[in-house]
View (cartoon, rainbow, N blue to C red):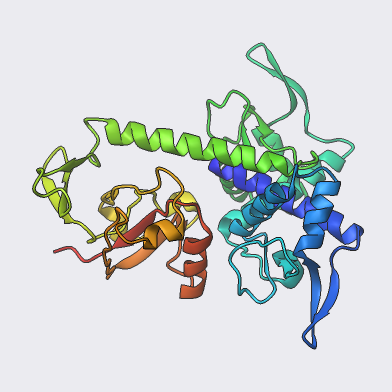
Length: 357
């Protein structure tokens, strides 16, 4: 779901970018004796979104654009703002200034989109109405025929290379077995594209899909944490140790993690995000979830008011930060990592590494 949502955000963002170019909202603009190419004014874009019924109101329009910023689709021209503000400020699509992050996942996604467009435009396309086990599937294709197509059109040098590409497309949610029962094989099994790249996206769909993705993530996390057999089940030591330490139960032994020792951890692996596995990751990550304060919205005035029911704590993280919200950051500079933390969801999930003691 998360990868499909990312794909929908990228498609919707690109469709919006092309529409804004056609409508002349994106153009070179001059501000403080400096020219900023291919940018737009935030409040003008908000006007456009509301007038074209892409957003019900200005607040929703700002939320939609913030969602695109969170996914690195657009940014402030000087990168001075991590949030989208409905004001006379200049923003730009990253594709228009060459700063779009072309990581492994994005490259595979674009490869899949290009392949989809080629197959749709082909008069003798392999995307046809086919039947498997008595069920008919539209625009389906046998795995072996897709590999034939890749080799014939220079997309792969061998059947092995074509198979690797197709499996990467399946792993990243671009194609799937029609019955969702098999991995990709060089055989007569039928597969389909999971994404209709040509379908016109409405921006309002993004927020709805994002809520569904977050809900499923919360449900999965809750089920895992509530499982008595889970090695990541958090237990408090005693009432006296309530604010000092957590114990992480395991089937074999138990570890002590002091409050503030580690940030909230995730057990996601690099390989699933398109990065090669690291030798140090042979040891499973330990999940530590501090008590949440996000049960309701809290204003800065409430936090700073005398007698507020909050206590200050200083957290010193002296480990290697591996992932931020499931994205590998080992190869990123600190500015990019900071932006991921500041512009991400309200709950930040970090995965860190520390020496074995």
